[in-house]
Image (cartoon, rainbow, N blue to C red):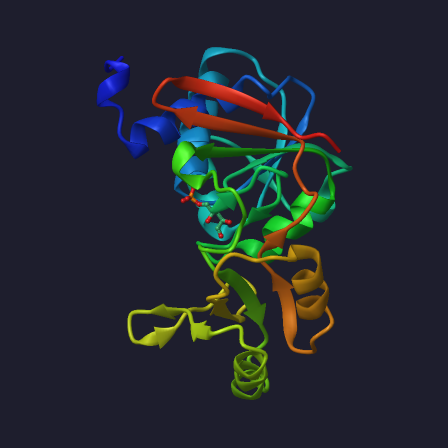
Length: 233
Ligand SMILES: O=C[C@H](O)[C@H](O)[C@H](O)COP(=O)(O)O
């Protein structure tokens, strides 16, 4: 293992990916999140499943995660084929001191939120750069249906949310559900629950990336080692 001082962000992601595998026990239904940190978790889980008889069922929060999981020999089920999900391990883009989070940097927020709300326990794995005093600087990804999305964009601009279209090359980004993403450049958010209510009550918005009161444990990769932060909820 590299000396702690030499660890870069990818090393920290690998560290928490490995640490999170220990949360998984035989017999569980496990939700696998999305993103580059989760990719390390999947690699570590695939390795563990080769080394010991770990009997689990998994569901995934994106097509990309399903492909990654299957590539290392993890069998994936459709969400409605399994009973309650016992544990979901996912990444996050920002987490604040009250354990409120922003997700959706990779555009997987809708499936992630559905899996999150169906899980008995939710764990997030992040490197220390994701820890903030108050969420918002990352922006808030919002998934919108294509119908009327230009009109919706204008409504969000009029509300002062500084919307930006998520692009993929010169095309609009397309989610696994065939929707679009508008990134709100809000800056630090004074009242996340109020913003969440406002977005949730706006027609055309399918889901937003504010994950409030949605996590039980955050595993943080620090240059000094792994820290487990238990949410008080
Ligand atoms: O849509 C993507 C997800 O919310 C990711 O979990 C989040 O963006 C964190 O991804 P990463 O681990 O790549 O920073």
